[in-house]
Image 1 (tube, rainbow, N blue to C red):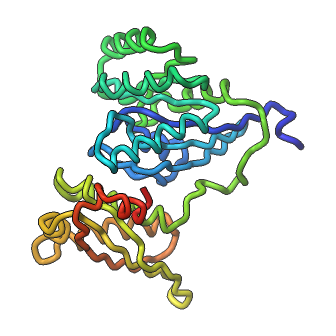
Image 2 (image 1 turned 90 degrees about the vertical axis):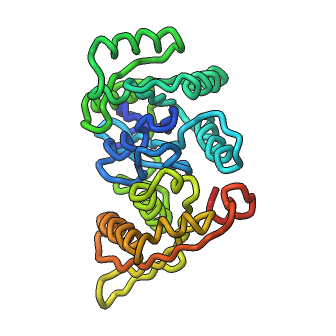
Image 3 (image 1 turned 30 degrees about the vertical axis):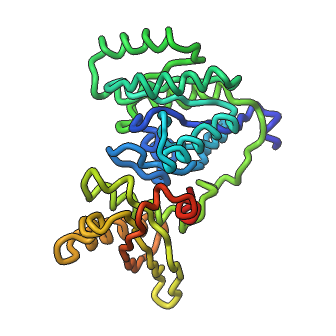
Length: 299
């Protein structure tokens, strides 16, 4: 049966918002599997992550974007450009805001960008598990004055509260049409990219505040050992200064082993097999300000 003739809906949904609004957490929640890395530190997501949600009445192709903010540094400018490009590709914009900790400067900046788009937008007010109902109602009233959203849905991406309601609201807006991807597709990203992102996530989560902006990860080799049903991965963690290399490695290599162990567990879940992971750390001075290095690392 042709799903396009039975009210089936499909479309691209750009998830946008200020840094730390919970965009990646929501995408992982909706997909039921982790494809987008998360941490409490801003600008964890640097690339556009595509995730495909298969529902009985729809197929939603989500574009998880980096946090949008006014940027001046070369890496941050490229990160924000990735997010803004997704707005033009979408059938629907899902604007995520942290109800517990508003970011007026970044949010107003994004609202200004939305005003230049003809795409309809839904507001997901996230982290309602962290605030009282009176504060939530005040936030909803404030947002209603800021922009004519098609709908406002208070949610908790962490607990899953109201996420099903949000999905139904998105389905209302999406156009009718057949699915874009086969029913077993989860993302268009190669496994190597996802593996590099999982390693970067662990490096960010397990180190201090100065590290997140300085870390990039490249996969040097990725091969299947059929005899042992194991994937063997060699990866390099790139940092900008020798002091950062010391932080990543830790005393006697303890921190690097900790990062490697945590990354290996997540990679094994992703790939569904045993993984041998070997990590190296390399200093590439000021790579985040170097155009050639940014291209090398995929930004």
